[in-house]
Image (cartoon, rainbow, N blue to C red; front, side, top):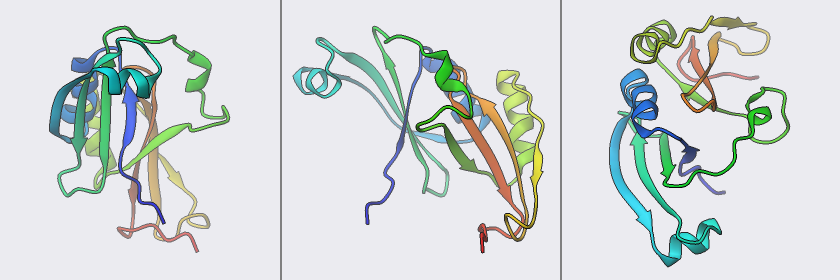
Length: 153
């Protein structure tokens, strides 16, 4: 079976994205490079494509996020930000303390969210979660499980 390697988020402002993912959520920068050249133009289908690429990792590993900021961004599609839109909808990040994570995002980015409790009939051991949008509108779920690992039986 394949293993999840990373999740890519395209941003229009790397500093704002780093304030959200690194300062707000505590992910650490493990790579910061410019991507360009024929290989990147072929991969993206965009002649002369050039982007700053920052890879972030969780302190204990297991969650890598690739942030890309293109020199010339593509079109915006606001409808893709809605939770019920078909396709890949959100990135879910497990946190140890949901309240502390939301407080850090409020302090670093001015983001506020109301956490909800998922019924125990759905997740044994309990789960609290909140949806937030990153600075470019990507939907991010922050989740905290009561017993450590989720139990969906």
